[in-house]
Length: 561
Image (cartoon, rainbow, N blue to C red; front, side, top):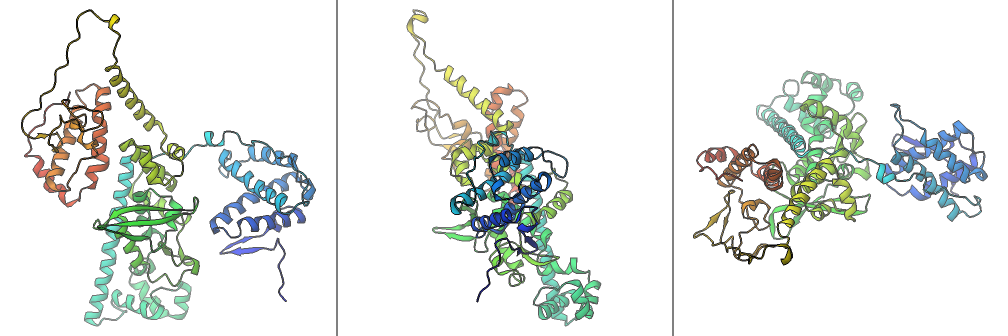
């Protein structure tokens, strides 16, 4: 005979115990809420269960202070109104009021459980007069995370690449130490490379806890301390949170993905692209929207996600069989003081602060990275639909909420002013408002002989052919002096092209000193932004020195007006 535990019996998840009998609620209320809770959230993600449990605990604190609920019959509309008023005066541990989004989500968690009881356990609760619009204008008044400028995002990515380069050198040194020990026949008492082999042979490649190692393998513990200790030896074998963090952060920046979804990315996230041998798809799940996201990246770049993912898989191989079964398919797994485990966004908070301090960066949070990357893309392209496709949003209004900000608003005002000025230049006045003189015929531009070359070095067969949208034959192509914004531009990643782009960037920067600010911002600032934020960073680092030498041989460009 199988014994069924009570509905409000405690349940343990990892180190957390969820016990509704500790919520300072009457026994019948705790049992009813427990039943609704496990039916609604019991099959969900563990982090979702923890989030809802933390919100329900607020209701226990409310009843502990007010003693308003004595039984199920007290769960009426007036109690819910009192709960909303109580939430409105609560403060955080730092003394600041709870945000409207926090108050709303906390109330909603209880509201959904009561709705489940009304629907699925009829007669258990009496009729409830639900409060209407308890937290008005929640979305309007909730501020999103502060966006980081594109230059700071590049600085963070460069810091990740520096750390990754150092980690690669460290792991290569570990391989050299092993090879030297095997060649010379040295023992672990004198060579750290031999100690690494002993750890593989004795412990399956994963060191036990320091206490266990000291008690059962004291001789190994002694020479482990001699060769630098756990902090020096372990990174040769597998990563901890600090070693794994730059890989994780680089993938978040490259993908503009949700930080929690990237932390839970699966190990089989790379997929080939048919007919494109030089690129691979990075695929990961987005649990909040129950969808799959995809981005393609170059295989050859050592700091793009395909190379980073393969390194992480190789580095974490020893840990994979030691983590809980439900986490073995994770890409990011690490060794912590509690043992091997899968990564989460919370586990990267400590390495984040250490990373910021080590590289002397301006403070930022993981939640800022996705909206910042999407905002940078929108400022460079001006195409909200392209940003929506990259973010994998169902509604374009969600994308607009991500990219709204003072910098984007200022840029949009400049664009609108430029468009309005262009429109006014094409206004046709009635004949009786002008002079009686016959209108002058606009001269037709005559294409110059030969091939036309823009200031960026891109050639055009005939810029007067009228093939660009919004132009007609005989008029100069509107994109000719701004070939960077032309969708048909093909830019080879070689040193001569990079030299012309660097030459053009200096020319655009110099033009800002003598040109009217409004004209420069409307016409030339977008081109300079594309150069700085999109094109030049895409060139391989090895081409930079040769391009700077070629730049000195280029002819001066014509002045911009």
